[in-house]
Length: 389
Ligand code: ADP
Ligand code: RBF
Ligand code: MG
Image 1 (tube, rainbow, N blue to C red):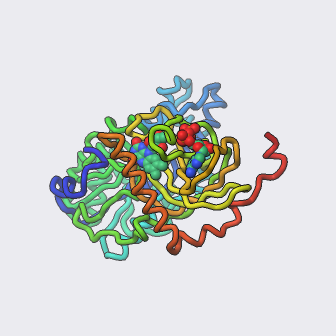
Image 2 (image 1 turned 90 degrees about the horizontal axis):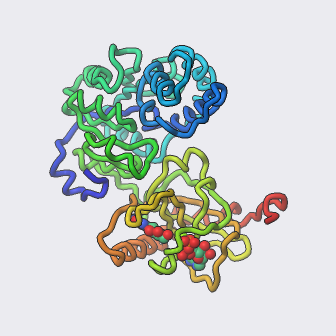
Image 3 (image 1 turned 60 degrees about the vertical axis):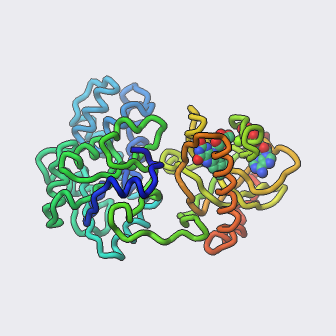
């Protein structure tokens, strides 16, 4: 099933549920980029280079099973236990840096305010979950059940502690092993791949729906009260600040679509966001010698063009008389509009981009979006040492 199925189509296929079971790592918390950072360090010690290979094999598994996957994927000569000792030492000091993923706090607050019972079913050992979480009513840890994901044990235990039948539970998961475990437990499952990618879909094929982020979750589809927090058509998000030189993109924004996009390198994102974020967003754009403007941007692989590389493409809602490649562009991204979609015709894509532009123009005049226009980040020139080319 595609993320762009209409709500009505989805609702017709889906049985209502009453309880929510969240995975933790990679679903609510961005622990995967911390794990990647640590693996890169450890693999270097073993004379190997971390290249992201095998991330999907490792994700969602318990520590020893994940270590075995890494050993196999990289041909290491140590045992899973040895690898884990090395990894754990580095991880322990980094867990506290884990940030919540976009949309996670919004969803938990929503369910909490409506009294919807929630549980966490995390493959992490109980003592690590304690460090990562402040408070949660029902928590089942990987070391509290016999078999790890993809076995159904952990979700069945969560249902039993929530005192509800598995069929009434909706699982929200980022990892293929977790999706399989939830299905084996007889639950419905929303997959939010923790590293959205062009070709992640086949590994999540048993999920009832795949979203590119928690911001796309529609509670009413599952029989829960809907979220009504859009302002002028956009969902307020924790703002992200990003800046960098305008680079050459695919060369079709102006020519093919009539909506030029001043592409930024993805490295302008923090590590955390570069890997997790996809979709259409609104915000403010600043060019030091020109001014501050409204903007609407697309982040992702442009399904219509099926790009190989992920792109960050802000369309600045202003008519410029010239190109400004190489100039430092500053963005504050403040709202989320929709996931990237595919279209049957180019006109449909163009019409949708203009619709997004209208949403941005109107929403950015409203609180809290309008406040950020004054932020000095948008117009602060780079220090001289960094702007010398
Ligand atoms: P590319 O594929 O190289 O990004 P585009 O056709 O998308 O090319 O054109 C983008 C370029 O056009 C930007 O890098 C910028 O220099 C210029 N430009 C002119 N007007 C705008 C605008 N309103 N928004 C974004 N970029 C613009
Ligand atoms: N491309 C898509 O394939 N699907 C989309 O839903 C989509 N939405 C966009 C929304 C906005 C506001 C902008 C500026 C671009 C969007 N594009 C989308 C990207 C478009 O394909 C891209 O700008 C061209 O590839 C030009 O490089
Ligand atoms: Mg462009």
